[in-house]
Amino acid sequence: MRSRSSRFLLLLCILVSSQLELVEAATQLCRNALFQMHWFTHGAIECLANVPGLHSNLRMCPAYDGIISCCQESFEEQQAKHFSFWKQILVMKIWRIRKSMEGVQRIRTQDVYSAASESDKQQLRRALETYGKVLELEGHANCFAALMTYVAGMICFSCEPTWKKRVLLGAHGVIRVNIAETTCTALWESCADFSVLATQLRQAVFDSRLAIMQSTPFENLAMFDDQQALCDWAHDAIALHPFTTPGEAEREATPARAAQDRRLRIAEANWTRAELSAASPSSGSDNSFSSVVRRLESGPPQQMLEYDAIKAGHLSGFPINWHDYSGKSGGRVRHRLSPLAALAVTSTLAAVILFH
Figure 1 (cartoon, rainbow, N blue to C red):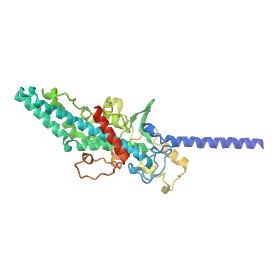
Figure 2 (figure 1 turned 90 degrees about the vertical axis):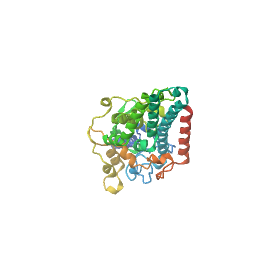
Figure 3 (figure 1 turned 120 degrees about the vertical axis):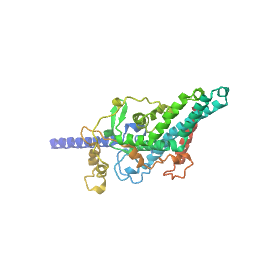
Figure 4 (figure 1 turned 30 degrees about the vertical axis):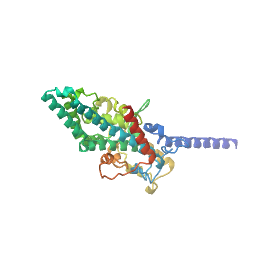
């Protein structure tokens, strides 16, 4: 009798231990290292879910409605706030280009301009014309809208329970997000024209003896030099820091590394969204808690999954249209920020202007 009781207790301990391990495994699915400050903690509201679950009213990342994900409605305030931070980073980039142009314009009021040759004056006019092309909405809107689409996609990456299959982890966190090649291609298609303008602007300013006399710093546009430079910058500045809070200068200071040292050479993943949907109650499959965890932890052996940030951004509910930010367009705003998020945007803008 004692032997039976001992065996029963042993089996009970094994069962309890297995269940605890299962719960811990499920918890890890929602502990994306890129969003560590927003992991679930008891009593917290605006955080990721403790374990993956089903939701049907996600506004920021509606592509995850009805499938297993780590996002919950209460977390969307944080998503909207950090999207707004990124918007201000890019808005301030345009603002600094404008301030640089104003510095060049002031040269025309100085004695050095009056004494300059006609050739020098012509080069200054050419530099100012190029500034104007860069600052026109049609000159940069497509590119900056694509960058905000990338941002939106990376913010929605917080919902992804298979995140570990899509990143390369190092001793101190994520060192690489396996961004799909289609993301880089789409980003460059939207920014190629702006890249030409940025290159022309830099050349026009440096060719002008008068333009380089102005005291305002020339804005760093090196990330737009070519497709690889832009893809690398977007990865290092945005993909690795989707929930950014520092000043934009710190984000833009991310050093670019050689492409051969940074790009992952992996086979294309074949775990699709349909397979995630198969875990939903309507699929008729094994939908037990343990089954869902096993499915989410599994994946193609020895392979990493890709993440298409641009595609995810287009599927999001964020206002990615750059014309919506200008205040001059009649474009429809897809999501209006709450007063709290709007206050955060205003505070960030004021701080950047004050300390820049």
